[in-house]
Image 1 (cartoon, rainbow, N blue to C red):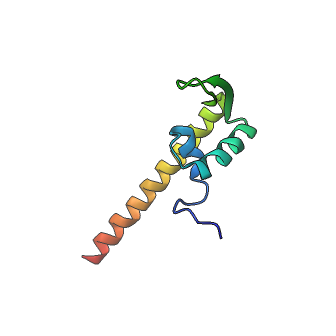
Image 2: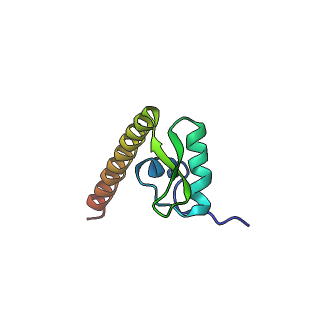
Image 3: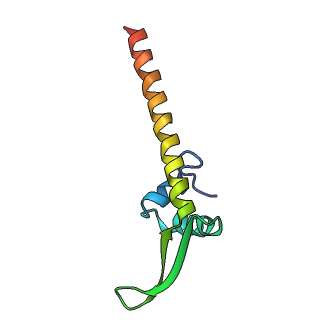
Length: 92
């Protein structure tokens, strides 16, 4: 049985593009997916501990997608806020 995320579907990709701090079980498949879509690029480099590690960075396409996704989420948050404020006024 797979544990379901509390995040709405489609949320993980923009979050990863902004901040890469997701549990490994979700992070690596999402990183590979974003890399295959051209939103991230990766290089193998030596880490601070001297081990080889894959380092990711946003591509130009990834940066554009992040801006689009962030704007979409901002519109959604504003719409939900408007609805909540309207329902509070109606309850008075």
